[in-house]
Length: 405
Ligand code: PLP
Image 1 (cartoon, rainbow, N blue to C red):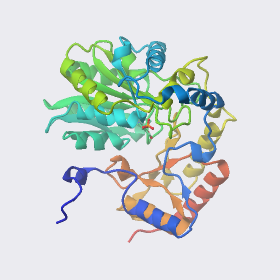
Image 2 (cartoon, rainbow, N blue to C red):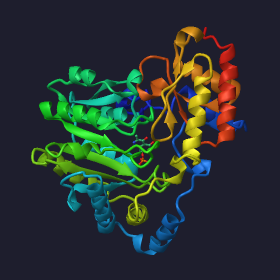
Image 3 (tube, rainbow, N blue to C red):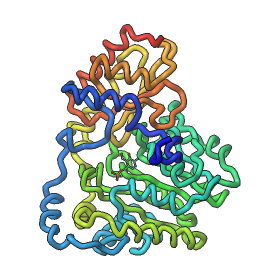
Image 4 (cartoon, rainbow, N blue to C red):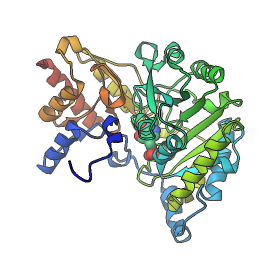
């Protein structure tokens, strides 16, 4: 055995961006093969550019942001985040309840590291954004997956959540709007989840990074706004809404009743100081990003790119024999179902790999999102219409005679 083996904790981490599909894609790229990537939620490569004001303001602030900031973040950034919480009716968020991070990712990991002891359980959705399961696992806890129901617009199955609460359960993760399904949860569903947390004294982890990417005139309800009597960890950031995933700008706000979590908060403060602070130039533009009138991004309105691309992908996928899908209401993901009997599919990763090799188009298999059955895959519909048309034609042609051995 090598002296420097990877940590055995990583053995149980399942992630969408590693494994044989990514290995093959990287090999093909190295050979000069052009691949259409429908696998990663990164707006910038698809000409979704950051607003000019954000870039200008960061340039103006660069000289003043060379040093470390307070470990929780710049006052101006946290004040703007605090006001954003007020706008979203998220109660009881003080400046000291806010931690800025190098994207939401860093804070998700931190929130689990500061909480979990071996054997502790966290309820995580299936399908999930896989960092949640990975973070629970790496922190030594156990991710217990609750089902989201495709037949009910991909809403969380409340009875399943109830069934899976045990004396070791510490909290429930709610990703709304959702990656990978694109679902937006109504208030009633959120209230039901809050009620389960209330009955069992659980923490709520609300990942709301897509809250400003909502279509069809719908409104996003912040989970924290429904739970003033519980402690809620509210996660949000600028990677998606402001198309600056590379700047790394996210935040965590503690809301509601924090009186029973003094030890946990001490741990979060310690972890926050250990990484010194988040990227300071990226914090300097939070005030600009969150200020001003709150109007819907034009890309999400009829005629706008995300809206029109959603319309196209939804219809085009449903037109392919053997594929069916729920219409996403938010974000830029769609999670179609594939008829596994028709194509004899028993391994979804194999399906995505075969498709990549033949058509040079990269999808993510449902298993990458902790979805157990091999009957789903995710498409990121950020590439423009021409590319999406190419992808759907390629998928239709590929499936016309696909049959897994
Ligand atoms: N949460 C969800 C649901 C996501 O989809 C992503 C990124 O795709 C993140 C968190 C992480 O975002 P970031 O670290 O860029 O803020």
